[in-house]
Image (tube, rainbow, N blue to C red):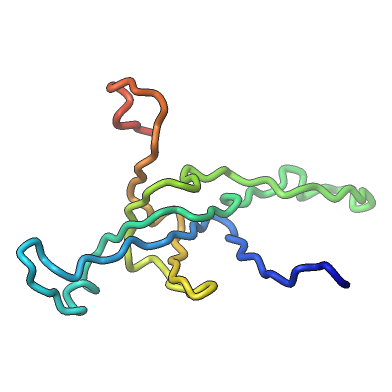
Length: 133
């Protein structure tokens, strides 16, 4: 097995999103330091989307077949995610799970806990500044 790398890969499952959290502000604009208890009470947090899962798994339409002799293995189908890698997300902090991967802190957040995303857009049409999906 010479030449093979033993590097592990983190795979996000289902409708979950891996977020690199933005550093929390520990000081006010006038320079006062905030205690950790005040920072922890924030309900909304933000960060950069690093990875997304495939989406919500959909049931197979022919899953209740009367023909059990069919041996075709079908690929699972997913409802795609709205969030994309590179988005800046605002999400409910209480729904997130903190993990440490390769000495860096990340948060795993279900897509349903994401309130809004900011995405770079090449189209400069001002009417499209706010999208309603």
